[in-house]
Length: 327
Image 1 (cartoon, one colour):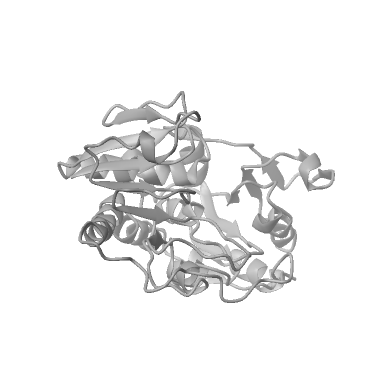
Image 2 (cartoon, rainbow, N blue to C red):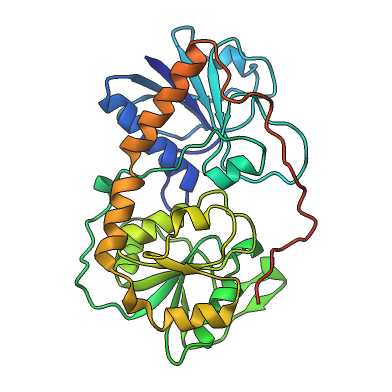
C-alpha cells in the first residue's frame, strides 16, 4: 500500500513533539510491514526510512498528493475536496459544535465519545527508540511533563501538590521558573526545579530518576503521550479524572482525583505502585505496532468505500467553564 502521511510540522520531533513522534513511529512501522510511506510536511523535515515532500502554499492540497498514493492520513482537517481515500486523525479538543469529517479518528474513547463518535486509536511509541529503564534505580523526586505555559496543564497544581507533602521534590519538564505567558508567574521554591523543553537522553534520564508523574490537568485530555512515556519508565501517574485519564490510568498504575490533598497523600505513598507493572503496561498496550495495525484497519475501511463514522462527529456539549475543577 502507498500511504501519504500529512501534517503541518517538522520531522523528526526533537523535544516535545507528541503528535510528530506518533506519526514518525507510525510511518516507521508501516515501512517494517512492507508498505510505502511518504510524508507531506514542512520544509526542513527529513526522514531516513520514507520519502519526504514539502508543503507548497502555491498549490492546492489535492494537487500535492502524488498519483500513486492509495490512501492519505491527514493530521489536520483538509479544507477542500480530496479525490483519494483518506482518514483524518484529530488529537486536539474543539469547543464548538462545528462538525468533523466523516473519516475522523480520535485518540481515546473519551475523546471520541465527547464528539458522538466511537472511532479512536490510542497513540503508541516505538519503545526500542527509548532507553530501557533501570527499574531498580534509586528515585528521589516526581516530575511534571507538559508545556507548562498551557494553563490547562496546571503546573501550578502540580507544585501545590508537592508543597502539601512533607518533603517531596518536583522536576518540571517543559516549563521555566519565570513565565510571562502565564501572567508573570515566578516560582520561587527550592523543592521545584525547572528544565524547560527537554528531549533525547536528558529527558529519559530525568524520567528514569522519577518516582511518578504529576498530571493534574484542568481540561479533558485527549490522550496524553506524557502519561505513557512516564509509565514506560516505571512512573505511576497522579492526575485528575478528566478526558482520557480514567481509560489510561488504572488503579494499579496511578491515582486520580481533582483534590490536591488526596493527590498529595497518594504521592507520599507512591511506593505502593509497582514500577515493573507500570513499565510492562505501557510496553504491552501502547506500542507503535499495535497503533499501526489499528490504523491499517481504518485505511482498508476507507479504501473499500466505507466511512469511519455514521455521521459527522460533533461536540455533544460545549464546555462553558474555562478550566475544569481542581482544588
